[in-house]
Length: 95
Image (cartoon, rainbow, N blue to C red; front, side, top):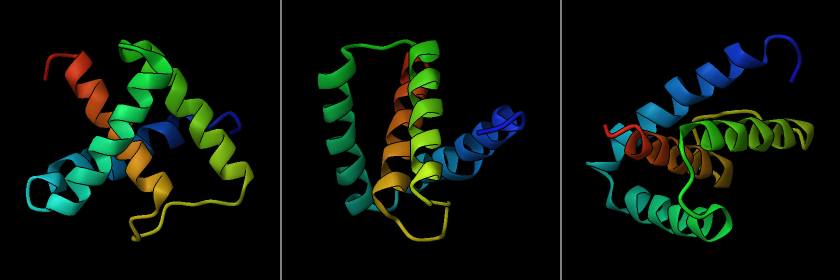
């Protein structure tokens, strides 16, 4: 990510993460997939706080963009991972 990385990260959190977390209530399949990602992230990161999760999300997004990934309307692996991180950030913030 370049100098606009904070803006791109904000868009990922808002447009993918927050929207995906809201969608989980009506989509048991998405909720189950997010739950699997959350379990994996907890195995990797322990019980991270918001700052650690934001750093993880930044690195994850940078790697995904380098591989040519870009957010689309499909629920691909990257989409679900971003939703999982955002869900964990909400929990870490007590929301």
